[in-house]
Length: 143
Image (cartoon, rainbow, N blue to C red; front, side, top):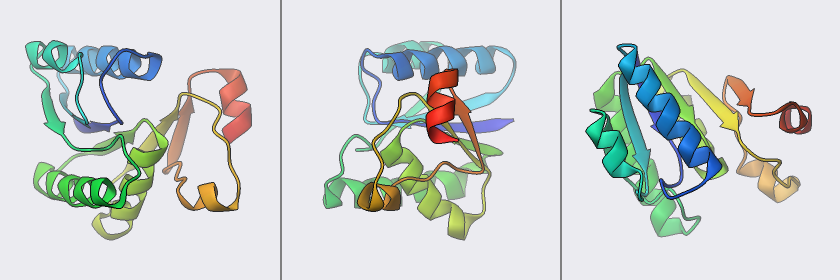
């Protein structure tokens, strides 16, 4: 299976560690994993495990960064023939949700935290076709 993991960055943190370990395990089981993020300290670990990293400014809500991330992910998804796209934060999930409408790929998200919601933030929130919660508390808050 070809899987694209999309997250904001790869510096030290729980979601980042989760993505790195999940990606390495899936790759060890024979899946082809690609990770897109703004980069960080874990990029070298992924690349050592044979996992491709694509640097995009997915860590910023600035229009210039969102636009660059949108077109960068569009190019990656169209050329990658991924079986699954897995987003791990609100900005990546928002962009992937926009792209899913036209590119028709399978999209899942993982909720790593309880996010504030409201009318404006709900416009930027997309939970994909399926959502994985890292705890029962987070699952109750988002499902």
